[in-house]
Image (cartoon, rainbow, N blue to C red; front, side, top):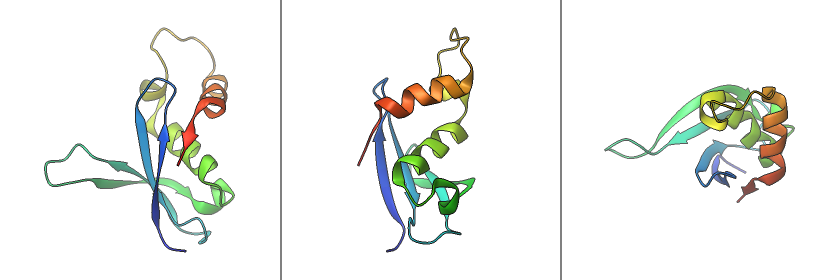
Length: 95
């Protein structure tokens, strides 16, 4: 398998696209940012496929975490980040 994109629908309506090669343990996981005039760009995360145990759902959750609490949590939410991420993980749909 080679690198491909996976899209996740977030519980609050946004989508997150990542790019990963789930067969290659040392391949990086990247967030695909589509807000550029000349097309999408990949923002590599510090994570590799092995960190996600070769699973697209875990790769997406690592990318969500990489995006930062400011992106995935309401500023009034006082829960621990791990608790918020666990809730998100139970609700996302990855394709």
